[in-house]
Length: 158
Image (tube, rainbow, N blue to C red; front, side):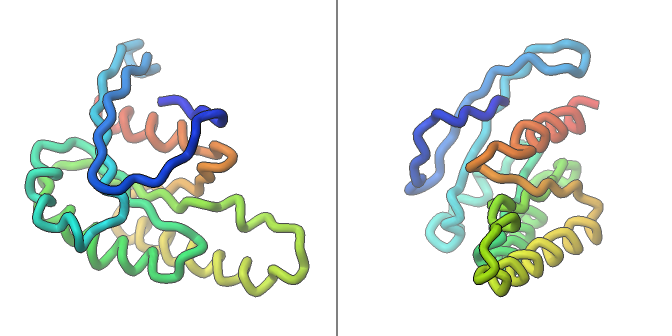
């Protein structure tokens, strides 16, 4: 899985699936991964959860530092449905996205940065409590995106 800073960003409007082929370091294998994105639209696609989660081997729960309810939704909606519909042996990781916002140099943003850090701490506490690895990422800079996906693939393959 590779980050491409020149790729055009777009908003997904519903469930979207991609097929990724990557040479992976574990046993030097070529991996074909099917990656699904439900685009944070839990209420709209809740009825599809059973089929989306069937036979998955890994899941990444994502929250955003700039949305206070993001962690709450990750726990009460996404994690709960994952536990309900996914196989018991699914590997789970947590991504805390938009961490580039934590490094703002503007003094007037200190309140925002503190709010972002609170969201980040809540997500990290949830991940730690459940034994999930957590990655502080930025889709803007590409920070740890590659690492998060490759670590999840490593865990699945071992």
